[in-house]
Amino acid sequence: KEPALGIRKTVTPTAGVRAGSTVTYTLVVTHALASDATAYNVIVTDSVPPILTYNAGSLQVSALGPGTVVSATVGNSLAITVSEYPTPAAPIYIAYTAAPNGDMQPCSRYTNTAFVRYTSQGGENPYDRDGSGVTPNDYWGSSSAAFTSTAVSIDKALLSDLDYTIGDFITYTVWITLPTGTTRNLSVTDTVP
Image (tube, rainbow, N blue to C red; front, side, top):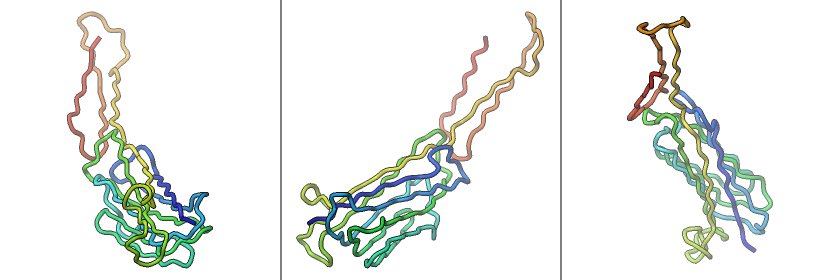
């Protein structure tokens, strides 16, 4: 008998993230259908992307069962340990929030990956598979979630709708809306007919 765990990560919102937004990550750890044994020393790790700042105190963990849960955060790194996760059991739910910092570029995609590692025996056993390698030491899984930041928007309008003739001055207005953050190498080209 062996445990087999999977992890699924999601993020909301998935688009339009800008300064002042809150991004919520949700991680769900479950036993796979083929899993027929208790998993021990379940460790979930997640590093918040550097363009976000982890909201201290927002980490929530729900893990029912006999195991103890220990969570730790250091800066943007999170680690959750569940000592024992039997099968069948309810999923382990983990959620936290983060906020964009000034380094976010507009119209960019940011991907973040969470990992789960586990063993098949309780306690410390130097010969137990722990997910630190490849087959057969494959007691690990990962899942990624991505969001995109707000795009730059450009609008152009004709100042007045007159019947112009040769030699008339025509005034156009161009609005460029930049989301709060860092915008590098912005170049706007307007081709006049």
